[in-house]
Image (tube, rainbow, N blue to C red; front, side):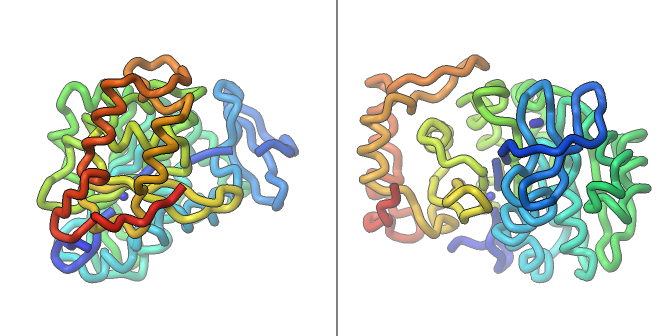
Length: 325
């Protein structure tokens, strides 16, 4: 499987999800299984990747906390003008997308969901197991149409929804400049399997290309479940400002990145930079092959010169960035 400056008075954000192992097995497909987490919630497990989706709190709570609430999706939709665009990278079983749909159904507005994945199998599996998973219940018809036609338009309570599904290789789609054909996002749900299992989704070129698709006039942020040094280094070198994201379930903190420092409440500071420079796992992946290496001298110098650490102020001072480990 593959988040302050404001636009029209509203903050804007983008994102990147994971997994634990006491499992009771239920239904099985060629790859995906329905499993039960320690808290009793059911979720999807991929045997090919050896990872569960939303492993900490389960699909409903984790999607709501990490993507909807932290991104202030409802608040921004209420006060925004025009279509609110979400890039849902790593559609999987659609837990994140459906969390956004449930949260916004009472809001009068227009929501455009653009989902990406290299397989439709987890979504098909989630639809077949909607009753057991619970979260897809009530959205079976839109999901079925999305699977068959790759697009569905429907009225979700008070909110008009256009939902698209781009089935294929997301890094290749970005590299081919197709990203420029899609409307720039107000929010991105980035929820790929881990770098160790799915390194093609976590390379520096992918995040550079993603950053280049953003509208400079539209502040945008990205949240990911990971707090790894190599991920944060990659985001910084791709052009983002990076900070500490909210805790979710098992994770004491996540990561938030943005194209403006004004969206980062807890930016990484000099103490983090010093640790990254000493780390034995900080060099970004440039090819879709997982590895753990220390920063090369040229990479370390680029990181030191990043505006976040050189005191560049943008619209607000960042000289006194909070130093978070």
